[in-house]
Image 1 (cartoon, rainbow, N blue to C red):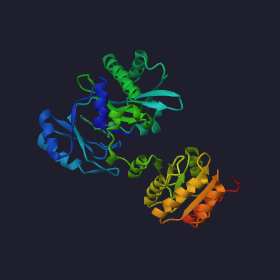
Image 2: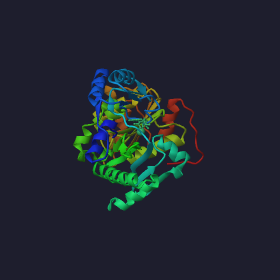
Image 3: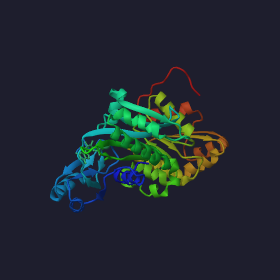
Image 4: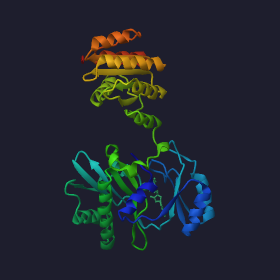
Length: 387
Ligand code: GDP
Ligand code: MN
């Protein structure tokens, strides 16, 4: 789950990180009042779940409260990479001598938690990673041992020459790691971490992503969820307990089981289609879930065909078929539907589907090819045969 910068800043502040205070505002009048309260030049920042707001015109400095009102008017309602700005953060502007990057991620490859630091901060860090990876220093921490001061100092000295500044940065790194660890983050970063002309180290941007599977341990963070800022389909899928990830393809996939869903997506690609989504309806034959799944898939204008791929294990095929029958009585998608049904009570399930005019396939390959055919996209049939 992503949270907004102003929310991440609060978490960082709780851990003692040097974050300048700010107010979140939803109207230009509120922006003006916040700037007047601060009484110094302020920075007005769009609160949307994407990076590169600065470049997109979503981060601006205002010298006076009237200035701030104008800028608030400009930024609120603005579109940044497809997201509408509904809130802005108003914080005291700082003078910047240098901008660095520090971040912590779950590093699957290293089987640990990796801290990253770069003196080339402020800009798009993905670009730095791509074009000049040598400018990013990394340190992998054993998650069971945590981070030591000497490790943090080593990293800090890799980006700062000044002893005092590096010392401050090392402390910030320790705190960032703790914030990351205790909140079950998948990512926590500060870009830029700035040094002011007075030699003070400040975190003036904050980004935190939380592992969805750990949210139950952080009800206070879960409450920060901003439904307006998330993909609508993913929001409604979560309501029905479906695991759903939206993709850009043309074949809507509805599958029971995450592994089978992955395999289905692979096969769709292999035969020349593009999956429109990952969707695991779980081991459920609940018609309500099936209807929800179909509605979500069918809403996507890119979807040209829907493929149901059901493997009956503990879930029985006849249950699933009954669920599908009930679902189709309630909702008929206006794109072709292909069903693959195999496993426990397959014959019974097949009969139920026949009664509503669906001739279910039993092989996955057949079903995938049929779905792609029905979508009217040109299938590419690989030479070898799969089961
Ligand atoms: P992002 O573009 O979405 O990552 O937003 P940031 O919060 O990182 O802001 C983008 C850039 O705006 C930063 O890299 C800074 O150069 C600049 N900026 C942000 N806040 C301030 C500030 O308080 N003072 C000054 N001088 N520049 C700022
Ligand atoms: Mn930034």
